[in-house]
Amino acid sequence: MKNRRPDWNSYFMEIAHIVSMRSTCLRRNVGAVIVKDKRILATGYNGAPSGLKHCLEVGCLREMLKIPPGERHELCRGLHAEQNAIIQAAYHGVSINGAHLYCTHLPCSICIKMLINAGIREVYYENGYPDELSLSLIEESSIVLKRIKRVKTKDPSARRTPPEPKAGTKRKTTSRNT
Image (cartoon, rainbow, N blue to C red; front, side):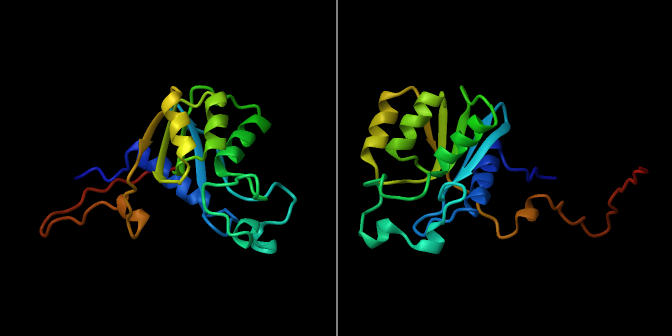
């Protein structure tokens, strides 16, 4: 029987995509997962600060001002997914020094500066982001950057479904009393 379990990078990237589903950004849904020793320490998605109205409710200032992606980050009411993950770790007193970040998108230059100072060692991402300064800062830092190609399946449970037995064979089953 072939092992249908995802490798660790695919596993954490898939979780980042699930986290991104909570995003309230009108432009791009981003999810981030901070991991150390194969354990999730914190997650984050992009959206307005706690208790404030989301862009889904009030609209997107960056869209109204026609600001291109990767520019004028300060003109957004939302926090980035990476920022929210760092904040969540700090809020709960969890050290992320030496951890890895899995993010659906390449972090922007502001987030990369925060990740450098937070001690993140590796950044895994799937989609690019148009911020040349970000790439320049990564090259200058000790952060290892790795792009992951997402393996998509129509039905995630298909990875766990054992193959059907061949004709004429019986599948051994066991029962467990609990």
